[in-house]
Image (cartoon, rainbow, N blue to C red):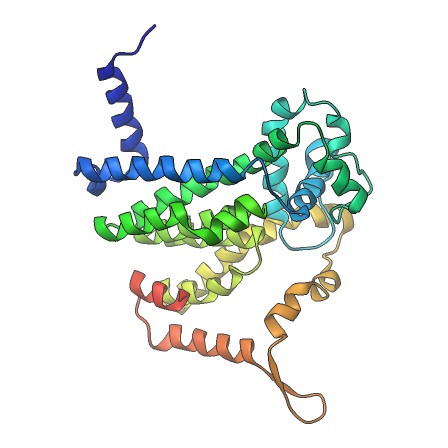
Length: 323
C-alpha cells in the first residue's frame, strides 16, 4: 500500500504534535528547522557510533550482562545500580539483534568478572568480526535518551527563540558527542531524568520532579548535589522541604533492596573507598595536624544556605542554584 504525499504530511504532523510543543508548531519555519537539525544531529552521531568506544562501555555492559542473562539481583557497590538495571534492560531489548552474531556467547562470557575487562577481553571485543554492528547496537539506547533530552529542552523552554538555540546546540554539542558516541559513556541516561525533573517542575509536579531527580542519582552519583537545593527551593514549608528531600532518596533506597535481599547489608565501606570521595574532597587547604578545610563542603553548605534564605520558589531560582 503506497502512502500519498498528503498521508506522509499528516504523519509528520502527528509525530511533531507528540514531540514538539505547541509554541513551536505555530511556526512552520521553526518546525522545519527542528527537523533539519534532527537530521544533522543523527548524521553526526551515526558517523561515530559504529567506529569508536572506550573499555568503560564494555565494562558497564559486562557487569549488567550478569543481571540480564544470568539472573543476578545485584552487583558489588551501592552506586549506579540504576545504570546497571537500565543496561540489563537494553541487553534484553537488543539481544535478538545480537544473537545471530558469530561468537555471541563469548561477547559477554566473563561470568566471574564484574569490574570491566582486561586487555585480552578488550582485544577479543574489538577484533570481533561484527564489531561495527555491535558498537552501533550498544550505543543505540544512548541515542534514544539523547534525542529525548533534546525534545525535553523544547518543552522546558517555552520561549521559542531560546528553545531553538538550545535544541541546535544540543544537536552539535561537541562535549556530549565525544563523551557518548566516541568515548561510549552513558551520560544521556541521567541527563534525561534531570531534564525530566525540570519539566515536571515547570508543570508544578514537584513530587514527581524529585523522584525523577532521584532516579538520576541511581544512575550517576553527582546529581545528588541538586537534591537539597531543589527540595529547599520547591518546598512551601519546612515539612514539605523534608518530604521532597526524602522523595529524592526513594529511588536510591529502592535500588538497594536487591542488595539487602542478597547480603543483608549495604557496602558503605566500598562506597567510602570509591574514587568519588577524592573528587569531592580532594581540593582542600591543610591546616595544623590532621585538620583541613574542604572546599567542596564549605561551598556546598553556602549553596544550601543561599537556597534556603535568598531564593524564592521559582524556576529561575532552580536555574541559579544549579548554575
